[in-house]
Image: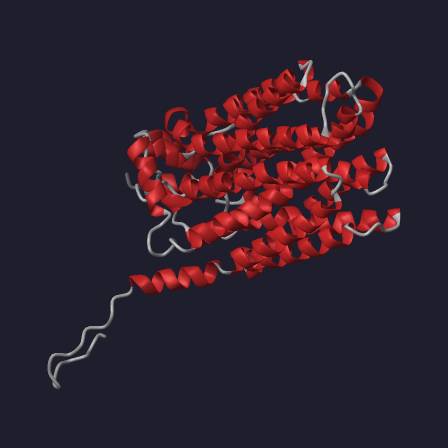
Length: 455
């Protein structure tokens, strides 16, 4: 359906102002995502001191991996369910799942039920992030995808700071269970707002055959009307085709590199979010200071995302991500040394500037690798495969902690940063190789006098 000149004149301009409601609602959802992910790390020292729960460092690491394994399943299945429910209702379902999971954790009398609650939360957490990223990138103004992604992801770190605040104030006064009861708030606050105010994706509406609704949403927010090329294919066959498209010649070498970079980035994000307070406590810092480090590193993450978004729009997400990974590795090695408390706070804050936005810029880099119709699938798989790093990180650091080798955790983080830097830095080369593979050799003239005009 072509757009008439009259309707084009009535469309608002495609700016941050017109798409602010979508960004704000997704920001709120990711805020609660960050709060739920970081709650476990913020209260873990208190839980380890609770003899009635029976939590040990090894079990704590395993439960952290259960959470991220749930995220892996949630991330990989959200796309198929989106065909049926749409992105809007899937976001609502995701928030509801991790809120219910938090309630299960609050009521758990032992580590078994608590672990189930964290796994249940992970199902919702895993689906939410790729959905929100796909939504804001679809609604983002032209040439502002990296900045919009960075603004969205600041909410994750504000949520992490909120979780740390609850761990510092509510857990000592009322017990760690009340911190998990606070994790039920997303279902009471975010779900009604998402249902009432969040629009459906125009691309998803078009893929479901709802052309008029797709055009209406696009016109309301100043977006270009979706075309069949931009719409994700629906159904199981469409989903399989979308995955195959990630390995078309232009991107078949870049895709596994993005997956490896995402693996390293999420190993860092979830390893640090789960274990930083306990690792710093093992290094000799006090309980309050150790938990405070989680707030400081999330505050650094907010600053880093604001810097990274603008820098990536100017210099490219790939270049920024690679540099940020290297700086993260340097920060992790500095944390291995027992520095004065004030210096340690500064190192933690600066490391947070690089650590979290290195991973977010991997997501932003997919915008230059995949076509519009592949973006949601590309993001989903970069996020989903990367979740294996989120599974490995908490388990690996927990295994080291159970053997008294917490300091090796910082070395592990540094190695992950270096590998992530190499992987993302190779993406442009991989794309060039892929493009060269698609070019046919020039025809050879059959005779000396053959024309070469137009070659």
